[in-house]
Length: 237
Image 1 (cartoon, rainbow, N blue to C red):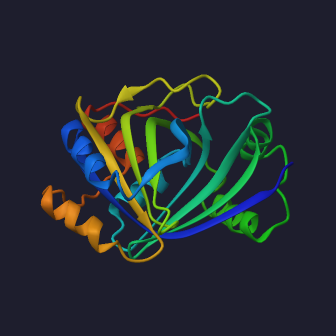
Image 2: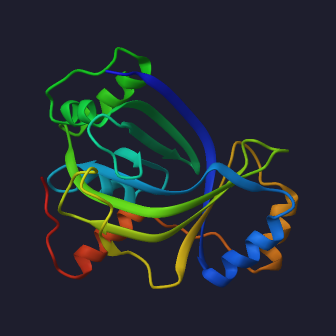
């Protein structure tokens, strides 16, 4: 089992935009930021949860601390492709992400309790969360199209645009594709600003000029609340 380890600590702010607002933002930042080397990508996340969806319910209700467990891929993976097992925590607005890369087959084996994980500090944290929630299982798939931009002057400052956000509570595997129901009205998308410190003043000026303001938005949380509003019981594998 591969054990590439990644950790992140940063501030993330989300904004609900129209396509027109996105175009305006891109025009304003064109001289300061450029597209990420991976360009556009399809991001897929398989969220793990308990039979009563305790993890996402806690996240929706929490004011200070939130956490999620998920398996993430970029594009539709096959069994030997690299994916990322992640523990994402948010405390007082600061995001802490613990990520371990492994093959999709190994990740499924770990989630199903058929294989142990690498003996690393990050995996100890992920294992602790898995044990705390009683070994949660696949509960939802969230997918979207992402465009990422970064600043040469400030490498830890990034902007992403996530569109066509879709979800499903069945077909709970990453290797069967990214289909799902749309989570936002047509023409709407989420912009995320990610930084290791404060937001550059010029970016604050752009947001003020375009009258763009932060919002609270969770892709998994939105999908879950939509299902409840429709009085449908989400499936659990």
